[in-house]
Length: 213
Image (cartoon, rainbow, N blue to C red; front, top):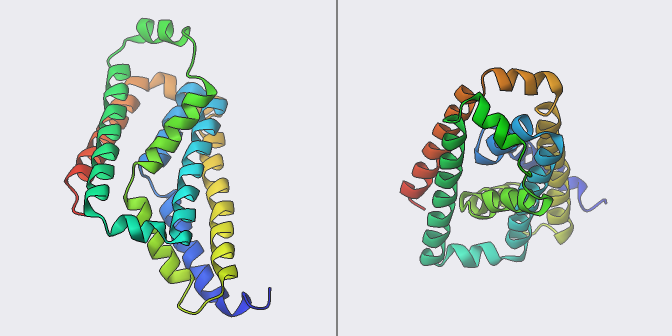
């Protein structure tokens, strides 16, 4: 523990940066919100668990040096960018299709079996694993929280702290937006909200596909 204390200022800055980035509106947060509001707490928590797993998959890759290896291969990042952009555009299409349904069609759809726990989890996992910007975010966090010469325990502490913050943030969004009053408000404005979600995912997908990495 004593070897970690000298690096606490850098770790605090890195944790703050992670919290701000995690809580800011992005594809993962918006997907958690829309899923929790429209499908309930269980679905939102499962998707949040998938997002969290994806985030820490990149964290482990960064810690092991594999992300730097991936970054050195431009073709790998281009493929990842295309997959991520296509996935976001698919989410936009799903949201737009749902927004186009009237109340009767939406109610009929709700009687159909919901996505399985596995598919909800994999949906969240896919959102984060197909986002190449997640690699660079962790590289940035590592450069802030683990300066040259820092012991390995600093990296472990960095990732553990981020894991706790991510868990609180993602689970918190899922719990808050699955509350009854929020769900009732969603039903009143469902088509507008889902149209906005479709626009957001489409914008994020196009932005990712056209971004220079």
